[in-house]
Image (tube, rainbow, N blue to C red; front, side, top):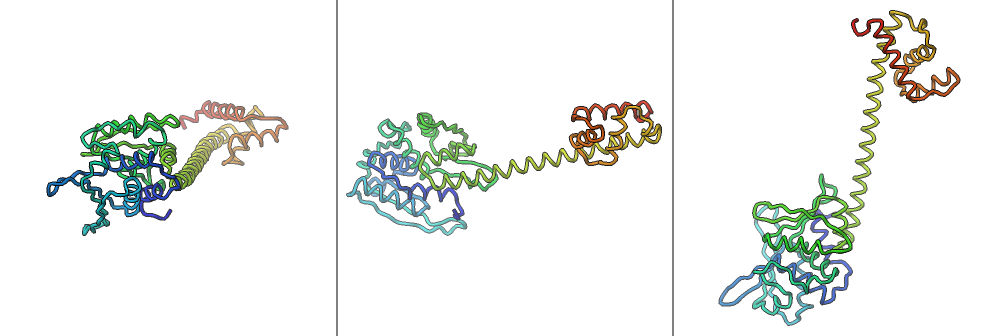
Length: 320
């Protein structure tokens, strides 16, 4: 997907998907969109339903579904270009005397509860949430620094009703969190797997596949980086320990002489550590095993280095 806005991609994905919206599914989608996005205006002794959105494809989709639901509905369509920087064209739908439409969609702007008839099946909940995302949803591109999907709502009680609706879903669990941001009531997801599942649930299938591909790529990259960092840390730790051990061995050689160490394993390990300063304990175990024609363990190497340190301390290494 090449779009600047991943949110825009998701909304257009919802509009373009191949769902055959029956009337039962059109109604909850339109109901949630209009309940969230719509405004009632009284002008010239008449009531108008006012819808405004910046995405041309979404407004066309809503317009076409309104016409499918009520073919005789008179809809006035217009647009307004913004002169402000980074603001696009706003598309506007006006419906005069919308009483019949609001009744058909079970919308009461003064009531926060969601009518049961709109959400008594999971397929209807899916449509209701798809309409909600079209109206007020947003999602970070998974290529960005963090994962985040949210609904930004104006009404706290309606936000609680949405949470209750989401918790009714039986096939999958979504752990939406709530936060108030200035005058907005925000429901959000941060976990990448939950966001992916939610996009799939509302049938934004292309967006879901894109999100998963990027997420898997990012997670793989993060795992690789952690492994590289771990390897780097282990290598640096090996060098640090090796330098300390070589210093102790040189001190023993100066004060006693390595050849005079009675323990054969300790004597040979001193020689091997000088010869292989970057070798790990496993690698030293293999080399010492070759010298002694036996099997030497990593723990045995660790024990021998403690012996070397004890010898150095007895020769006053710590007080040099």
